[in-house]
Image (cartoon, rainbow, N blue to C red; front, side):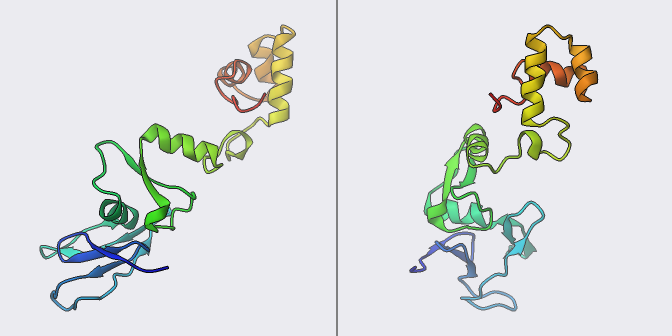
Amino acid sequence: MHEEWMPSLPGYEVSNLGRVRRSTPGKRTVPGRILKAQLQKVGYYSVRPTIGGENVHFYVHDLVAAAFIGAKPDGWHVNHLDGVKTNNHAWNLEYVTRKGNMEHAARTGLMARGDRLPQAKLTPDSVIALRSDRAAGVSFSKLAAKYGVSIATAFNAANGKNWSHVA
């Protein structure tokens, strides 16, 4: 794939492949120097360019999106279409609302739901059984005791507020 460079931050350029480089001479650096991206705990790459004598922090996907898509609308987020947080290719990025970002995560399986949550006490099978018991008239307090959850969890699971993806 051909790498294309666009202006980004003052003195820096960003490529459609997700790399950031120096575009003007600077203290102890030369044009063309690629910045080393650091993988953050949240799973995204970031760079720390020097602007105005200070090291600043930017996520690479934000820089790529701004250069190749345009300015990000207020309150919108950068979404990785393939769900891979480290894939900062321009073709893989889009702007979405928070709701759109969450829907994408749920649709692609990136968001843990149900028994994929580490603290989950129910399984899809137990939710189906719990709903069947509730339809038979079992009280929420008895459901909570039987399935080892709080009354609120039993209520929410039975009424589809939680575990809505289980039919």
